Image 1 (cartoon, rainbow over the protein chains, first blue to last red):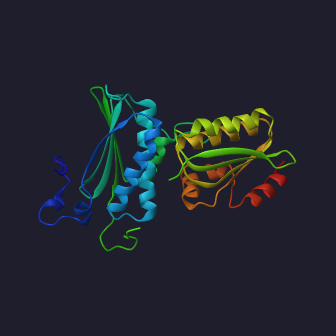
Image 2 (cartoon, each protein chain N blue to C red):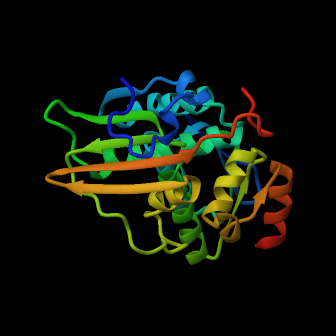
Image 3 (spheres, rainbow over the protein chains, first blue to last red):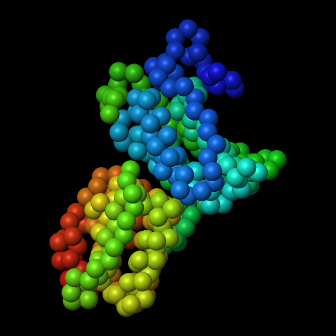
Length: 160
Length: 118
């Protein structure tokens, strides 16, 4: 039931990482409404906590997740049933959150103007996460955000 | 994570305060913007944005703050933001918003700063 497309899952032979054991993949369909953002943030925050991220990294993971879901609600197109996809799973050495919709999203090529009222969402994602990937093809867009899992036993690897 | 609310007050000498609490996200941003715009439409020149009870501010709400900074610059006014919340301060820092508007740790600090500014 774990990630089936996992070329980076080199650790899978033999030992599970602590995060693998603690966090089963989460696959959700969310109504594409701003009122769902609170739930999306909670899921992201809980997942990061379950994987042992420290409180700052939990916040960053939740924050970037909120931006990706906001983007899909604001600019994307929901499925015919009015929902967008949210998946959170451990993949290799990262906790990866994927947001999918039926729209076409192209990542901005330049940093936002400091005085502009919009256009900061993607900058936050790249600043707060270790890996940001936008795959837009055949009428769908998936934004994948990855944050490196804490190293077991390292300082800050607390359950708070 | 908590419910959003916003209110406005005038504390004399032409200083207006917009007090916000809870999560400032894409759902809350329109109401937040309406409240600030209302104050600016009424001619506010010194505005304190009291975010002391805000634990989360997303990019859309940050856009609203930048919009207020822009409008106040045009009218010769100024904005001061109050927040002592480390997460909010960090988010302001990430996008350089703390360079555009000073962040004060208390409302009193913001009031004294604005008194000297205009």
